[in-house]
Amino acid sequence: MIQHLASLPILLPMLAAVILLLPPCGKSVQIRRYASNTMALITFAVSVFLLIHIYNTGISVYAIGDWSAPYGIVLVADNLSTLLVALTSFLGLGAILFGSAGDDEKGSFYHPLVHFLVLGVNGAFLTGDLFNLFVFFEVLLIASYALLMHGGDKQNTRAALQYVILNLVGSSVFLIGLGILYGVLGTLNIADMAQKVSQLNGDDVFIAKAGGLLLLIVFALKGALLPLHLWLPNTYASAKPVVAALFAIMTKVGVYAMLRVYTVIFGEQAGALEHMVQPWLWGLAIATIVVGAMGAIAAQDLRKLTANLVLVSVGTLVALVALQNVNATAALLYYLVHSTLVSAALFLLADLIAKQRGKVADRLVGGRAVKQPLLLGACFVIAALTVVGMPPLSGFVGKIWILKSTLNSEQALVFWPVYLVTSFALLVALSRAGTSLFWERKDKRSESADCADANPLQVTVIIGLLACSPLLVIFGGPISEYMVGAATQLHDISGGINAVLKGGM
Image (cartoon, rainbow, N blue to C red; front, side):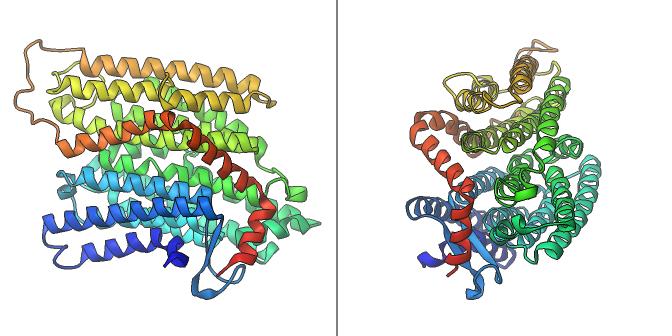
């Protein structure tokens, strides 16, 4: 079975989704929850085992049907992809546990859709060719369309329609870009493309550049990079918080695709096309950070504020992609894990706060007191301190690492002031949010007696997500070593090419 290990993070969620659609899971809520949680736990355990196995043994290439690359479909499990697969599986497990407290009954097929989404995201991280990256994009997008409508109303429908239309356009552009690159290179296997792109000459160089820039448009849309970011705040804010928390990983798929394509294919070994998108990425990343910070300051509710925090994290990650060096990529990976987990925790926390504040929900206005101010307030403070980068939490380590990795770059004079001012702006936005949610009162009398306490299972999920922040610091030594190893492996383009083209099983 060890030789098939790389395929299990894809096969297990697919199997889980199919099982959950069949009787008796399809008819019994309790059986469905039990089966869904069990399968999610197994998927997470297998993902962690895969991560450890790949870290100890090196890159694993799984050739489906025993058709080796570049002719067959291959899954490539390296330190980078297995890290993100483990993160996705952990987030999926959290979303399923949280939804099992009652949110799963507000719409149809919640559990199968979550597993299908995890299947699509894991597949996007593990695939070794761009066409199957497109296929897995479509799988995760179809699942996300339905999840956006979970327990929805008119606002959900409007946001979902915009999201669907934009992504359909993005999928069309993706196919056009792939067609152009295939016509020039004769392959869509990432390792094979990286080997052949430096051999292009004449007009083929410009044609390949056009195809690569079309892919940048697609990845910018998937990752919500300015100016293709407008869909994200409304979409994430209108979705159910548990769905928005799961979506925290989806923008990272776009960032991962940029990292993989523009480091491996169009990286330092690409000849005339070397680092062709770097100037674009820097400008767009800085603009996204600024716009995200402005959106957080102007947000009128906690979910919209958190959605704009996701934008800030996307801009930060793309800026590090543009640097194209090992230290920046290592900082990117650490920050990616940190920002995904804390964003998910804030979305879930917004749900509990909204339920205890009555009609005002999570809007940043004076309202009735939450029934559990100490518990929810403590969780909010920890999440806020993590976001703004206060020691001793992971946000501090991530920001210091990011600033250090950008120190010697030409863009440091722009990036440092923007990033530091943005951090201060986020501190102001989160302080204002905390004051509105926990201190401001329209009526001094208690009005929360009719509210139920937060479900212990949901609180446990939030605490589990928040606990990852100090754990990322406590185990900072081995974690940072892993991140540097993953970044080094990604930037070792020749080694990656040899592993894929000569290592298919």
